[in-house]
Figure 1: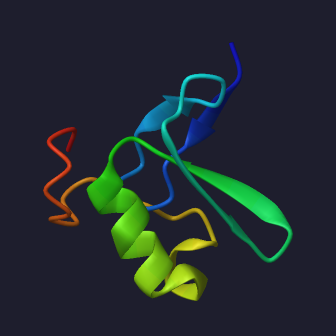
Figure 2: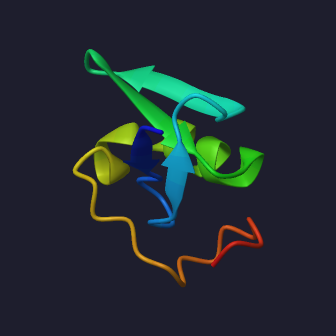
Length: 63
């Protein structure tokens, strides 16, 4: 199982099972929920550094 950190909320996501993903700057980012993907897509430069932290209020239900 290959895990990736959701850059918005910080949750670990299984890359093989992730339903939500975006490509940015030559890299694929994986998300736990549609709301995290939407948040990322609005301002990818803000989240691409990988400093996602719980409590960001994305309403994903995992934080």
